[in-house]
Each structure stands twice: as C-alpha cells, then as structure tokens.
Length: 392
Ligand SMILES: Cc1cc2nc3c(=O)[nH]c(=O)nc-3n(C[C@H](O)[C@H](O)[C@H](O)COP(=O)(O)OP(=O)(O)OC[C@H]3O[C@@H](n4cnc5c(N)ncnc54)[C@H](O)[C@@H]3O)c2cc1C
Image 1 (tube, rainbow, N blue to C red):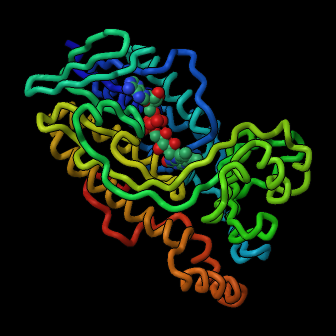
Image 2 (tube, rainbow, N blue to C red; image 1 turned 30 degrees about the vertical axis):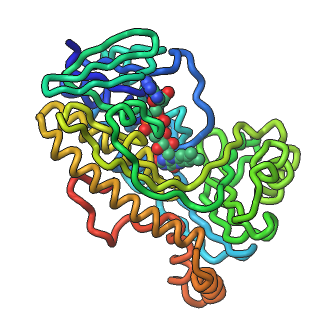
C-alpha cells in the first residue's frame, strides 16, 4: 500500500508531494492530465516571501531558483481617473525579496522539476472519480480503471475537486457580482514597460472601469474590472481586448495583436469547504479543493502552498484534526480579508465610492489618503487576528 497519494499536480499538489518527500515519505501523485499538458495563462503571479520560505524548507535552493527567474518590482503606483494619487519606490531588500512575480505555469515548472529530483512517483492520465475512506485507509478509483489504496490522501484537485465531492463535503460562501477580464501581454523587446505595479481607479480610457497592471517575467498581466451591466462578449473576447487594451497600456502597444498571450474572464468567488478532512481523518483537502478566494491579495496559491506544507506535516505526525482546524481557520480569515477587499473594489454602498473620490481629491495634501487608495484593493494582511496555523 502506498503511504500517501496526492491528487492533482497544480502548484498545491506539487508542493504537497515535495513536502512529503522532504519527510522521506514515498508519494504517488495522480494527475488527470497527460504528462505533456500545456497549462494556460499567467494566473497566480505573486509568490510571497513566506511561501518562498516554505518551498525552500521542502527543497533547499528552490526559492533561489524561483526568485532568480521571477521579477520583483520596487515601485507601486495608484491613479484615480487619470491622475496619480500614490507612487512609492522601495529600496531593494537585502536577502530574500518580499515577493517574486512569475507566471503560475513557470512556478509549476520549477516545482515539477524539484518533485522529479526528489523522487516523486507521477501517475499521469489518472483522473480520480471515486474515493472511499475507512478507519484503516483510503481507496481511490480512476477513470481508466486503476484502483489505488493508501494510508492518506492529500486532495489538491482544484476548484471542482472530485475527491471533495466524493466525500460529500460542501463548499460554503458567496460569489460576487460582475466579472473581470484578465489578459497576458508579452513584453515588446527593447520597449518594455517600467517595472512597476499600477492600479488605476475608474480609468477614463476604459469607460471608468478600474484596471490593474502587474509585471511578470516576459510580460505583464492586465486586469479589467467590468461594470455590473457589462457583457463578457463586449470585453472578454480577444477581439474586444484588441479594442480596449491599447488605451489602457499606452504607447508601443498599439500594434499588439501578436502580443496578446491569453484572455480569460473570472468572477469573484469566496468559498470555504465545510471541513478540511473526512470523518476518518484520512483525506486532507488543500488549495482550491478546500477554498476559493478572489485573486486580489494573492491569497489563492500562497495559502494553498501553506496548506500543502501543513498537510504533509499532519500526515507525518498524525495530527490531521489539528491540520483541518488550523487551515480552515486560516481560510476563513483569508475569506474575510478578501471580502473587505471586495467591498472596496465593488462597493455595494454609494458612500464607499464617494469616500474614494474624496480620498483621491485629498491625496496631494494628505498622503495617507493616497496610501489608503493604494492598499485597500487587496484587503488587510494584518490587523485581524491571524489564526493558529499560519498567515495564509
Ligand atoms: C486570474 C487569476 C489570477 C490569480 N492570481 C493569483 C495570485 O496572484 N496569487 C495567488 O496566490 N493565487 C492567484 N490565483 C489563484 C490560483 O491560480 C489558484 O489558487 C491555484 O491555481 C490553485 O492551485 P491548486 O493546485 O489548488 O489547483 P489547480 O491549479 O486547479 O490544480 C488542480 C490540479 O488537479 C488536477 N485535477 C483536477 N481534477 C482531478 C481529478 N479528478 N483527478 C486527478 N487530477 C485532477 C488538475 O488537472 C490540476 O492539475 C489566481 C487565479 C486566477 C484565475
């Protein structure tokens, strides 16, 4: 019997496999996709310093590999209706940077190579369709007829987790109104945009929609926050993006048809699994199998990797109930923080927009107003008690 099976080779499953190997536990990683799959889009860009520390503990040197490929910017700017209300350039930090930014597919590439070096056993084309947990272990059935038995399962099979569904664990929470469009654009060699993160409230060139631009190695991600009545076909297709993108990106990107790498739309979901384990404490849910957060604040992948580290420790020490309680508390904390960000980004009350407008007007004389406009879209990182089990 395999001691531990990880389901799903996304960033969370790969991290869980690595963390198990760091504890010398044999691990089989089952992934529905084929070995040569191509994952789309930049998606999770930020890898926070705390996450880098976790990854380095799983495989010494991994954080250095990731940061030397990723990009760290030192300038953050916020604009309101075309006027700058905040700009700050921080000195480069000595030692590990506060974060690094790279496409999720690149992070996964580093994680997968580390797993291969660490001796993780991969089972590709292995879609799990059934799970049975008992006091003595877990049996998994795959779509191709494979049956696997093991002592514990770390389920990192994403938002539509078949393992979670098989255990009958519901997701609890809400979904936000409206949608965002996310676009990856390749850098124009020799005419790269400044290395800075820019948030623009009510961009005049985008009909008053808010726009964020975030660099990553080789390009940048643009996030357009659509209005409540907008239709996806008017903003979220490649043809529609060609119309609005040059206005929000600016000079040098007019002829950018060949520079668009990926276009997608998403809605804000805030959901947390009712339990992070089954009654026999044999299956541990991690990452998006356990929680869904809006991307603003970069809580998704970062908290998923923290789940992965905690799950591996729980399997090694037998403290599964403690894992489930601590990581669910962390997820509820993150969900709350994401809700605060959401109330700022998509205010339900007119007074919030008026406050933002007033802060923008006062920012030139009251820097704290500009600072509030800069920080609020991402929600709090501190200020709310951090539950046991970690920040993310
Ligand atoms: C636009 C956007 C921007 C984002 N930005 C950020 C960010 O800046 N920072 C951040 O932290 N997060 C961000 N996120 C969220 C981040 O992308 C997710 O949190 C992350 O992908 C979750 O990783 P995961 O490993 O839990 O799940 P996934 O990445 O979904 O991986 C699940 C894996 O399981 C496999 N699988 C599924 N079902 C089965 C099955 N039945 N059997 C076997 N295998 C299966 C899938 O093929 C996949 O490989 C963003 C998301 C979006 C959409």
